[in-house]
Image 1 (cartoon, rainbow over the protein chains, first blue to last red):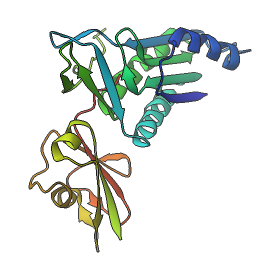
Image 2: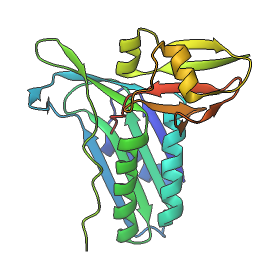
Image 3: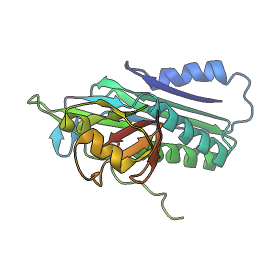
Image 4: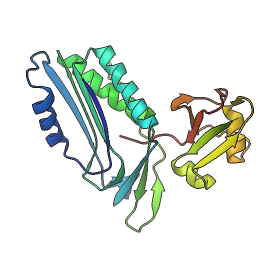
Length: 153
Length: 77
């Protein structure tokens, strides 16, 4: 099962996972591995303190791109389940921005798929961050950090 | 017949508008849609484009009733 959700209000990723586990994973005896990534807002960026940010998105295309990214990962790594939850709107430091969780038979597929979903999301899903600094000024974040390649074996 | 053109984030703020409707009689390239909707000659190299919510490029042909969007590099996650 695949679930994609955009949320305009804060959420607790650990509670979300517990609820998901209780509702969707009853009787799942096949998944030997789960990998989870939680991205959280920092209170600094580019050497400056950041007090809050606004996350803009392209309604429709964002969901469409996330669906494609996750469906592609489910196919490639033969995942049992995959979950992506992403915030939009006003976000404060320490609040979660994104939750990616995947379930598969073995750990290798789970680790790789979770990492892949996160990297492709950061470079193709249409979201834009606008930061507010302590003096009240605002600025758009220029770009994400470069694609993080898998280390060589 | 028309094409809906959307602009997001810093690009929307720079151009001063988030949405434009172009009346067109025949298909146009993305490059021509950019010129007619932004008033600027060349599509900047760092501006991304989508047609009907899939990534496209300057040469992609835009059909009547398509939705085109221009936006800066994405910064989610």
